[in-house]
Length: 191
Image (cartoon, rainbow, N blue to C red; front, side):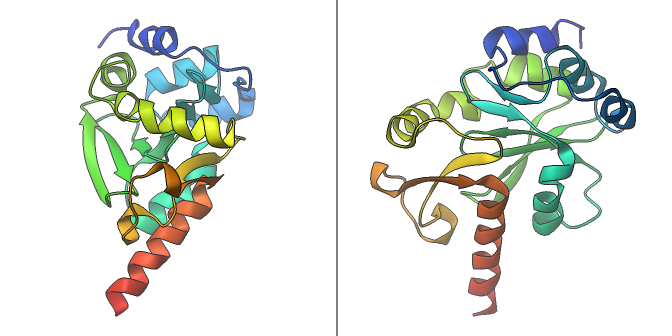
């Protein structure tokens, strides 16, 4: 773990024009609740989209309802970032970074810590950002840029029987889409 890891992230994915450094009160509140490397990026370049909207560093409070809906109230982690296709990365102040994938209904560890996540995983060839380059390009060409809080997705959702296809691409509120998928899954299980 080095201080260079957050810089590797911002070199690979420069902040977009909407990225803004949060208030001093926000940063002070986050101290000790999120990893120091994430706090370092928030302090230097802020929350918002990075890498031409490939990923957004998010306000944990906005995306926390997704984690509590999908994983329960005692996850011990906070939302940190969301890909343009809604993969929600979450972590505690130390320890592993996990990815909640609404498409395939998985939650997996993707990096042992935030420094590795920012400096190695995200810029690496096996991240969701690399995997989603084709669908992201198609979605951007069809729907244009994302607004704050929006993601691209497939409709119907893959988790609910949908297909990965240019014909099923959609764009909308990311938190609402996570909630819709979860409700659909719950309804299916109820029978």
